[in-house]
Image (tube, rainbow, N blue to C red; front, side):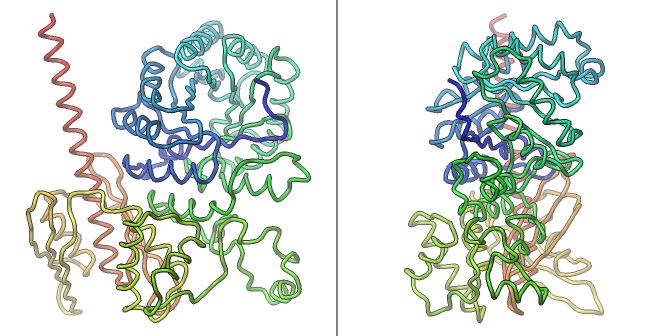
Length: 527
């Protein structure tokens, strides 16, 4: 089926390429929450992961395929039968599924990574597409590092995979090297020189190493691309990927120029952005386009004067378009359930009854501590409940003592899901350091602290503080975050979040080792 020239498909790879960003790994429940948010946002394709990468990746893709409906669910695979069969099995339960196969084509990759001649690259690419078509009618092919591939050879590969049955051909700027005019020429060349290209969807996938991922993606649309591959908040390897919210709002705001539309529900952009930021522990810069705190702020007197006359003087889009509001004082301790539920809905979040009841309980407790509750307070409560407690340990009690003349001391009491209650006391350079050491002693997990951040998520002296912790354990980076009006408490809960992630990863690794040893014993018995 030929692509619709008036539509640009949004292919979200937050769960695959985005998660490859250091420190952005997600648990399976977190991936499901993000996938459901992406479905509500209206993305056309969710690339749920790389099933052959690990058992955990396979299970996550399989869970998204089973439980998330609406978008096409996609799995990545190299051009070999093993990868493709694993992807097909992981995607089997998805009503709409796609297998995405890739193979590098540039001279640099051919020489230094693959050690393959051009003829072998073409053969492998065709073989990969044909195998994928055995399992799925919707097959995408990506010539990795396409932007640094010789145009004649790139056209040869693209024509071969189209003839083999690819329905989408993606042209990636894998290392963020190209510039808009040069990239547009790639698409113009392919459309002019590749037979059958009018019958497939041309896609674009850009990285942001030179800060041009969004510009290059938009240029590709002008040159004929009708699918953009992107991530929420632009997360991804190195400098990140094309930012979904930026490219979508550029197409919407300048619709008269681009003459295309997307199916994105733009009022869901801000809550989805906040959800991904909370889960990955990657804060959104204040000056981030579209979803940053300053995106619709005006401090200059000249700007404020113009805004008072008419918003269009200094705003090319409305905050409401992306799910932001300008309300300040929202609710207080006397506010009821109906008012809170309505405010949560206005902020773009959907909660079931059980989740709402938990938010309402925490809202009442917070309202007793704070004089004023802002939108940021409500968002923090909702995100905390949505993220939930994914690990076995919970903080039952925390006490800290600080004195300028002696080391700080912290006491923690942790509760484990198996019924254990563990108490420990430790000293440190400050109350946070002491609490971290007490948790390490209680859980038996020692980590190396790499980064610790605290930022205010709301206004005023009684603002809530969001703590984010990055640690290294067994050569892997883990992160955790938490929000509270008490900075020491939020920091302690963020550190415990990290410990829970590590323990869950250790449990998953143990299960994987047991499965492998069981398979080895079965193989030996068969021999």
